[in-house]
Amino acid sequence: MQAAYLRQSNMERGVRSLYARWLLHHMRNWDVRSASGVDVFVANSNYIARRIRKVYRRQAQVVYPPVEVRPWKNLPSVRQDYVVVSRMVPYKRIDLVVEAFSRMPDRVLHVVGDGPEREKIAHLATHAPNIILHGRLSDADVENYMCHAKAFVFAAEEDFGITMVEAQACGTPLIVFNRGGARDIVRQDNDIAGPTGIFFSEQSAEAIVAAVEQFEATVPPIDAQLCHTNAQRFSEEAFRQNMFHVVENAMALQNEQ
Image (cartoon, rainbow, N blue to C red):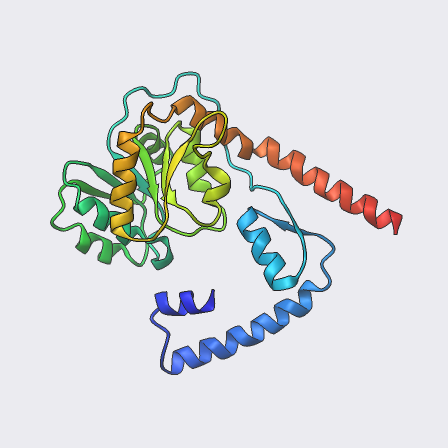
């Protein structure tokens, strides 16, 4: 993803760009040489497993990362507004979410997080009173916003996406970009239990607006308990069990050799 990162960092041209490309070239060569000594590749999503197969020509076993998923006896019944929780860096595309909600003045968006793009995001939200920037909050406050939101909106292409799982653990549906780890997290319409979120297919404000409208028109509404149950697939206990099996199988294979 060199081209994407250079573009998002405004380093497509100039001396800094030449140096970055030279450095990345040598890092890639070192990386490929080092990868030849790996016994087992473990990927945190099917998205990354496919990239490992493409780059290293090796199969990877998928073990989802551990997420603290605590049980809820009573999920919040009153849900209003929308929320996005993220570091404010270019690839997270918070600008697209803010732009989308600036076109939907009747829908409130809470933006939680901080980072180098904070000033840019604040500027985009200047004339949109329905968009509230909170900056960096405590874990308890983040959970409160997640658990009382209609939906968690996310426009980035993530390797996995732990905040998406945390939102699902709160019983909160997802409205997310249909790439990366999100495809492993969201249950779709064809799932026998039912969907836990809505996908949009391109990173644009228009696509996000359409997805929000689709979400609000979904009948019956996405079930909060189903979202919470879905998050259990990514619990710390599930991670321990899956990782144990990977290591156990690798050791058995080595002993056979």
